[in-house]
Image (tube, rainbow, N blue to C red; front, side, top):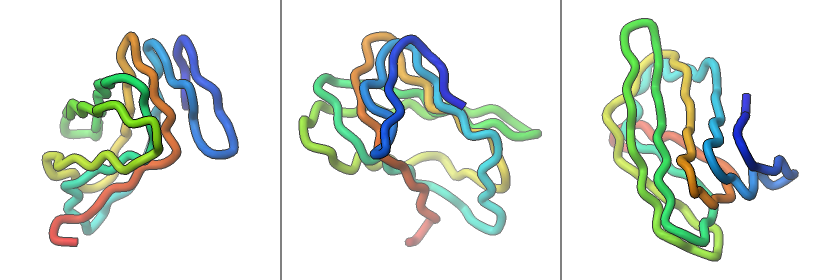
Length: 111
């Protein structure tokens, strides 16, 4: 699901993400993996802060991602605390955001 003040869903991704936009994936399964890296592919004209919530039956955990401006789309890669099993994941774009998100990926420890 996606909701918030301003965004545009395009063939390429979710563009013009602005104030208070949340993108939620209800069930991403990491069974058998220890995920410790998250990469976003996109661009932003200003510094952006994104909160990523990982929620499962045991806990809710937040990672804070800081992205420097880049007019051209690029990878923004972050080391995160290990994620296991199935969880709900929410990307929360804070007030003042200006981001074009084309895709994201998670990587397993050691890969």
